[in-house]
Image (cartoon, rainbow over all chains, first blue to last red; front, side):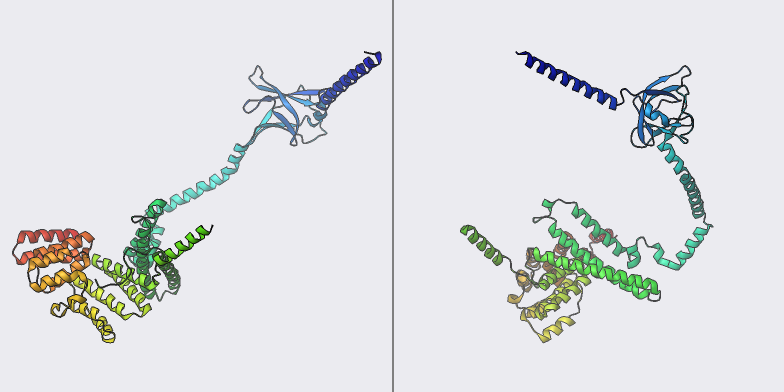
Length: 303
Length: 220
C-alpha cells in the first residue's frame, strides 16, 4: 500500500469519527445534556398518585420532571423536581405547585405563577403541593344539586303523606274528579276507557300477545303445514274482528260524549286512526290469503 | 344455454297452470263465513255477527245472488245446528228474484220438509241420513249421522231430528261429543241441556243430575 492511500484512509477515518462525535454531542446538547439543571424540593402529606418521572407542567408545557420521592424524618413526602436552567425562570417564590388528578388520564404536577417579577424560588425552600382532584371537584359541583334533590324528596314525602291521608288535599281533588269522570276513572287502560268494555281491551291485548309469541318463533317454524304462517292469517283475522269491536264501541262512546266537544274530537281522531288500522290489516290479510290459498277450495258451499 | 331457457319457460308455464287466480271477494267471503260458523257455534255471537256482515259485504261486491242465498242458508243451517229458529225473509227475497233449485231444496231440508227434499240435489253428506230417516229406524239414523264427516253437518242433522222430536240418547250424545271435540261451547251447552231434559223425561234422575252439574261447571 502506498503512503498516499494510507493518508487518505486515515483522513476518512478521522473525519468520520469527528462527524459521529459531533453528531452525538449536538444531540446531547439539543436534548439539554449540558444544560444546567435546578433541583427544587416540594413536600406533600400524601404520596398518592405521585410517581418518579412524572411530568412537571407550566401553562400546559412540560418544563421538567419529578426526580425522586422520599420521606423525611417527620414522615412527610419530599418530592425532588428537576428543572432545566432555561425553565427555572418560571418558578418564583409565589409559585403554587399542585398535583392534578384528572378523571381520565395520568396525574401531573402543575406549576402556576401569578407574578413573574417576584423573586426566584430558592432551591432550599420547600413549598407544599396542593391536591386538585376532578372527582372532588365534581362532587363539589353536584352538592348543590343534591341539596335541591333533597328538597324535592322532602316535598314528595309531604305529597305522599298527603295522599295517604284520607282528608288530604290530593285525595279531595281525586274524589272530586272521580265523581266527574264516573265509570271512566275505574277503567284500567286507555283502550278500555275508549271502548268502554274491558272485554274489547282484553281481546286486543291477547292478540298483541299472540303476535309477540309468533315473532319469537324461528323462520323454519313459519313455513310448512303446521308452521306459523297459517297461524298469522288466523291471528290477523282475529285482530280485525277485535278492532272492529272497538270501532263499534268507540262509535257508541262518540255518540254518548257528543256534548263534551273536546273529548269527542279526540275520540273521533282515535276512531279514524283505528279505522285506518282496520283497513290496512284487512288488506294485509287478503294479500296473505292470496299468496297462501288455504287447503280448502275457497268456495261457499251449502253446509 | 338454450336448454336453460327452455327449462325456465317450461317451469313458468307449469307454475302459471298450477296457480289459478282467485278473486279477492271469493277468498274473503269464504274465510269470513268460516269464521262466522266457528264463532257462532262457540258462543261469540257478536263477533259472529260481524263476520257474517262482512261475508255479505264481500259477496255483494260480486252481485252473485246464488252465492248470497247460500250464505243465508248457511246462517240458517248454523241456527238449526244449535236448535234455534231462523228468520228466512232474506233468503225468500232472493229466491223470488233468482230461484236456484239446489238452494231451494236445501231450504226445504232445513225447514224439515223431508218429503219434498230431492236427495240428488242435497249435499252428498246427507244421503245416508235422509235414507235412514225415511226408513224410520232410529238406530240406523244414529249410525248414518255418526258417519257424516263434517261436524257442522252432523249437528245440522241432529238439530233437524230434535226439531222433529225423533231422537234418542245416542243421537244427542253424538251431538255433545261433536260440539265438545270442536270446542263449540254454545252447541255443547244446547245439547247437554237437551240431554238433561231427555233424562228427566225418562225419569233417569241420577244421569240428569250429573248432566246438570256438568252444565253448571262449564257455564262458570
